[in-house]
Length: 147
Image (tube, rainbow, N blue to C red; front, side):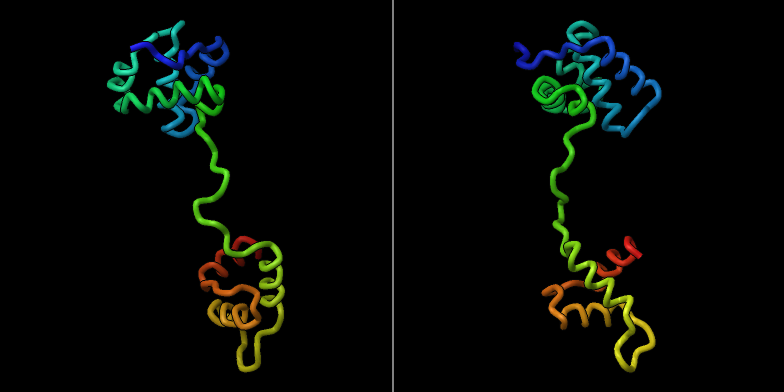
């Protein structure tokens, strides 16, 4: 079958890939992509997709996808992969809400309490309608990263 996406690497790219493999620089996924790209290079090893898939214990579709990424999006994205645009779980608190919560936490606790507990802070944040609902664990993580 005729390959749709042909891999042609420059000398610098080939050298970077060989360095990545030799020194195991980056994640395991990056090293495997480097190996696949080197073997798919028409001016280098020029292996078939099936040979590459068998050698590196992956599917032929993986090899095809890496070829496609190289041709369509460039060398760096083919090697490193695409970065996420948005986190898998959207953030609950924005900067303004975080500022209000921190200000509340730094103030004195309500009468009858010596300190703010996370659950007490959560109740007050909801009562003051800073957010509609939030867990004490979310507040703990937010306070830990800022305080």
